[in-house]
Amino acid sequence: MIKRITLSIPEDLLKMSKDYAKKHHISLNQLICDLLSKTVAWKPNR
Image (tube, rainbow, N blue to C red):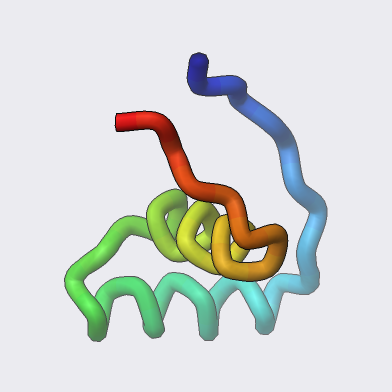
């Protein structure tokens, strides 16, 4: 199940994150999911 959340992050970090995601051809959502998954070593059931 996918849950929606709200994050509060500094504006400059948001811009850098969007630029990074665009450069790597991924969405900001996917970038955040990837980083969280790596941080907690979670593997989705697919």
